[in-house]
Image (cartoon, rainbow, N blue to C red; front, side):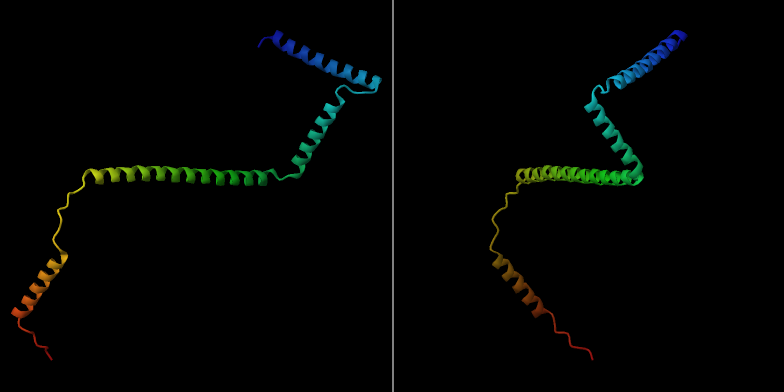
Length: 138
């Protein structure tokens, strides 16, 4: 920056400072303030912020806030991952249903299961009849 730019900033600062002093003198002579309600509200807010800064343990407060936010974030992540798993599950269920219906096996009607059980029993009986009984060894 050039020297002229610095001079402009200095002059603006001096003009603002002079205006502040003139306003203060004018208010003192008049006995009232401009924007009294707004200034009083601003003063109360500044005092409140100053009280908080002096009496609140900001380290503990920030630690608790960060812990709470991380807990909330982990809950959101778990919820979203569960939603993703459910979406994949629905997709796979539809795919399996489609593949099963597409490749349905035309099962020929089977014979009666009792006939099979009867034949199996007859076979076991014939095996027992052809094998000699083994005596117990003592």
